Length: 369
Image (cartoon, rainbow, N blue to C red; front, side, top):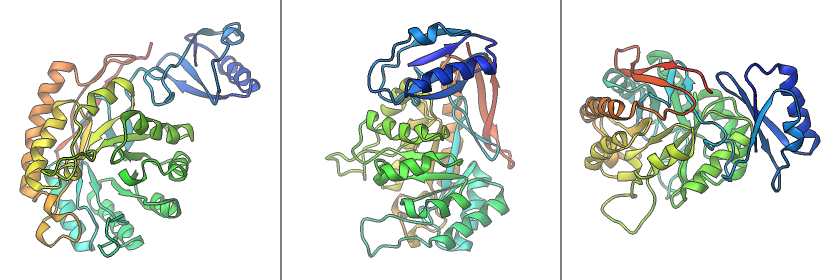
């Protein structure tokens, strides 16, 4: 249930509703809006009797939430969430590009690629310090040394960095270095890891599992938000099917469905979906055309010698072409759809510019009703 306060409700009136919810044994989660505050009722086993809340001063209405994912749902928050990562905006009317190698191999490799991708359009640098691999004999990443290299990349280029925490034990360490903590597809339903992410103050990038339904994916995001972290970015990266022409099958239909169901930003990883370099650019173009909020792309200056996922990594020139092409596609998308859902907030946005003058974001937020 969502208890919606009237405009101008005082902190004491809001606290009275929170106390009333908690006295019934539920959890109250206030959700500030532009002009109103809504309070989400959590941890109820069945329907909630709204009559006692409706009698309280400044309560406008009580709305049942029908989705199993409450905080993630647009029933709880109609307007799109925008996440600020070191000045880079993700979500709403922004198209954010994360790019870099699959794995951090050494400092020279990381800085070389970072300079290239920043120059041609990236806003956030991606790179794995811990690598969960199918084979125990494959390169597993540099660990903390890789995290230190990511920190040096951020220092030199000014780009925020995103990297994966592969388990609960290394989350604290990753959290110290990363601007965004990634939870990979294999860990989408690692519930102890999700609960730890819910306690973090860092944004969390949650990849869809190999065979997860959209509801399961959104419920995993609910675990993080229920823990108190509302900075969640969803990432579609392909699901496992019977196909052999690609590594996975990129579910582009998931993007508009998730945008309809949830207020959270959703980006697409065409690299892990494709598994082959020649598919990454067309899949990236298609992802922008269906309305994603950004791409996560693997780029390597010498993919033939890469220690991880070289065959799907773009050359820098290919990445530059992709950025140029999706800027044109995004402009068309914005013109036809206004670039966002017109619910709760009126948002106008454009591809923002980062420090190098490449794509980044700007916005004009109206008020939530």
